[in-house]
Amino acid sequence: MSLMSEKILRTEDLAATDDERALRRCRRAEDLQEAGRHEEARAALGDLWRRVGERPETRGLGARAAAEVLLRAGAVAGFVGSARQIEGAQEFAKNVISESASRFRELGEGAREAEALRELGYCYWREGGYDEARVVLGESLARLPQVGCEEQRAQTLLRLAIVESSSARMNDALRILTQAAPLFESGAGDAKRGTFHMELAVVLATLAEDERREDYSDRALLEFAAATHYFERAGHARYLAAAENNFAFFLFKRGRFAEAREHLDHARALFARLRDAAHAAQVDETRARVLLAEGRAAEAESAARAAARALAAGGEQAILAEALATQGRALARLGRTEEARVVLARAARIAELAGDLEGAGLTELTTLEELSDALTPAQMRELYDSADRLLARTERRETLARLRECARRVVAAVARAGENVAAGEIESFAAQECARLGKVVRFTPAALDAMLRLPCGADAQSLRALVTRTVERAEDGAEIEASAVETVALRHRVEGADFAAPWANFAFKDEVRRFEERLIEQALLDARGSVSRAARLLGFRHHESLNWRLKNRNRALLEARTPARKRRRSIIRKHD
Image (cartoon, rainbow, N blue to C red):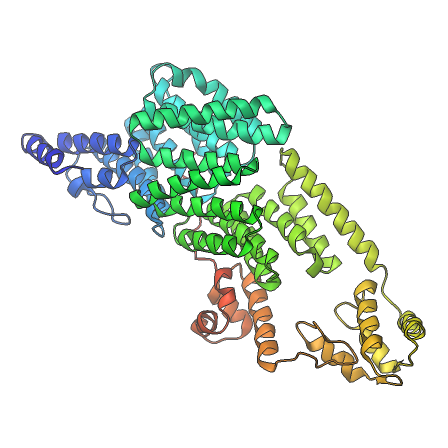
């Protein structure tokens, strides 16, 4: 807010009552919020509310003025917390807005309660709690009077469409947007009309790809152009930047990478100027996808890692999960298999805990697609079962096609593995390999028994590959003892090693570190990312011991931690 505007407000405040002063400041903050000037909106509230996390000052105010202050402080906190990635901001905003909704309900002000619920639903959406957001926004629509609230109904329908779009329910989103279209055409301002056209463009672009509808693709281009036009006319830089990012994603999906990067550059510059860390990080995540599609995996991993780091503290878990999934794909393409598994597992866990089941299921599919060569048939089957459960309600054809393809991979892997291999079969196969290579290599009975206890003992293909490599490397007349097999079993990786040379390429520190990482990773997974619970599972007396290892010795697992989050409580009271 300009110094002149602040001076005018203060002058007007001198002749006003406390309630009039508070209501005037709330109206000014709302105007600035709708213009995307969130920091100025916070400043406009003056001494009524200073910062995220600090309760608004309502002492001495009447019931309605107090409710308005709580609503505006909560709404602005949600936007500021998202832009600056302030930890706990969405939880704070939900609590304050919930109190506001309750106060409006007690006053019998249905329209104002409906607005509070609309802002509350948006907070849930930011966190990835799509089911909660859907319920709250539906309650907001139910609270609106049937006549005289067309603009508010339009905004609520738009946010409900955004929730459905984020949940990959594109046909539901299109139905809601079609219902809302007349409301936006009849009298909404430029910024609001721009948001409508932008969301419609995103939905049409996705449906164009899913249903192979060129007419939808053409319509999406027109809607993107309309959104840009209205945002420019409104002078709404934040929404213009979001439109640029969304249009870049549209171009990326159609293989127009160079054009996509141009629009991403513009979006990134706008968000940087606005000091909007969250949306700048989303641009970085889109850029990572483009780089990955161009085969520039190292640059993609760096961009996705930066995006995930920026999003880690802000509570917007679904978006964080997307950035981690993109980073995991890049790591897999770089051959950094173990790191990729850790990051992808964290992405799936965060998405599921946030309520984004579609995102969690897609991440499980990504793990299967990118890392199937490093997974056992049992691990592949477990991932597929999880993805199938999480994607049970998906409507997207592309997702269903990926699910079917992964099912075929799992079936093929299980078929290749076959039944458990008997010791006699191993001995027979070894004899065949010796005959093929003109060698005599004997496996002792104890060694044959030890092979059956290997992690790959039920996987005939993997075990035969080890036997073949052993016979190829062993000297003629060599005898393979059980100790060689046990050494291979103890190793985390066996590249270059086999039963003839079980210590090949061995480095003690690396093996111990990898084994330690496997134990810590599993403990963190079982503890759902809680360091204190994982420390107890591992037998540490103090969780700081585990924290020290994560920060100093096992840094690859740092992102497997999940910040503690308060349990979300229902904010809608039951009515008779």
